[in-house]
Every structure is written in structure tokens, then in C-alpha cells.
Length: 300
Image (tube, rainbow, N blue to C red; front, top):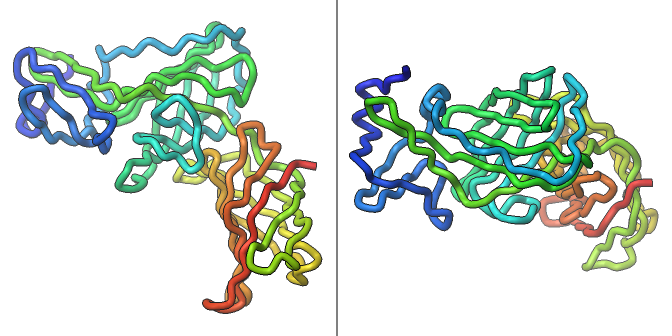
């Protein structure tokens, strides 16, 4: 039996049969809307309180495939029916999942309309016979079924919190329908046409070579390293590049200390990692002299 502390009872009072839910248009991951009373209650309650708050894993018609034990995988989970990069529905979650036998673990940052929170550690279970994965942390729970084909978008049941009052009772507060997807590692060479809209003469073929780390950092992102070659017509040459991928989002920069010009790249990939969409590749000689490129790079 798990009993709330007096402080929790004071901060999270729930009376009788009052029904509570998240308003997907206004919820920030920490606001609970009651039918009769507006309750402001932090969702960072002990994971043990989630006992009794069961969420049925989303079903899949595909035949599931057992996951390799010990591998970390890059995931993006977000409210709604489709993936976007960056996520524009809330709450969304960017991070990593690891399966070891029947145990599942994860590291996810929560993206809300007000910003991105610090990463939280998740723990849970994996059933190889069904492909069901359940992960829980303080205030959130994910339940979904691993698809038969990797890098496929799947429904995810996201529980946004759990509150209760003696005798032990638990009311799950479920967010709007969510989806999630595993993103393949960015390992290899990507090439394609990048365009400078200000000076089209700088446009041309660019090449990006990347290697992704096998394990996430403390924030759940995966490190990337490699080199970037600008279009020949620009005369900018080749630069080392490093950064991270978090979900589908890619952020890269030239890591050389004190180097001028400053090179930075913001992009996104697709789940199978065959394409990188560059939303902004900047070559900044000075603060006022910046050349920017956009375009799509495909794996070679």
C-alpha cells in the first residue's frame, strides 16, 4: 500500500468523485483541470503512485520482432496523430530507450509549450512475445507495442500524471492521443543541393558525413560527429562538424575553438535516416556577414 505524505495531500487534494483531466489545448504537463475546481498540482509524484493506474498498450496488427538486447535507440513521442520536427504538439518527449531482456529503461526530456524540461530517467518492462513496452517515471507513463518493421510510427498511450487520496486510489490523467517513432542512426554520407537564396551563385552540391554515438548523453540525445563540405561555387571548403540528434531534430556546429567563420546547421531527419532536411546552414564570417543555405541531403 502506498500512502501520500501530508505535504502531498495538502498540495494534491482530490475530493470524492471529482473527475479530472488535462485540457490538451492548455495543459503544460503540470496543470490539472477539474470539472468543479481548478487544482494546481505538480505531476512529479513518486512512480509508485502509478500502481493501479494501468494503461492498455496500443495494439499493432504487425508481427512484432524481439528487440536486440542492450542497444539504445533514439525516440520521439508527441501528442497528436503525426510526427513533426521540431515537435509542435504538447506534451512531447525526446530521448532514448534501452531493452535488456525483460527490462526497459529510458531517458526523456519533456517538451512543453513553455520550453523543454530536464531529462528524466524511465524504467519499465518489455515483453518479447508481444512487443509491449511500458516505461514510467515521476509523473509520466508510456505504453506502446513495438512494430514489426522498425522506424514505423506507432500509437503511444501517454499517462500525464497520477494523483490520489487515502484510501489508496489513483486517477490517471491522460493526455491527448499520441504517437511515437524510433529514428535510425545517422551513420554515413549525405549529399544534395543546398540553395543560398540571397546569392544563388553560391548554391550547389554539399556533402555531410556523420557518425552517431551508440549511447545517449545524460539528456537522452545522441552525439554526432563528422565533416561538412559546402558547395564548391561558394568557396567555403570543408569543416569538421559535431553536435547532437534528439528525436528527429539535428543540431551541428564547427567545434573548433575561436574559429572564424562560425559554421552551424539546424536540420531534421526522417525515421529511416535516409534524408536530412536542412532548415538553416549558416556560414558566418562576422555577425553581420552571414551566408545561409537550405535544402535536402540524401544518403549515398
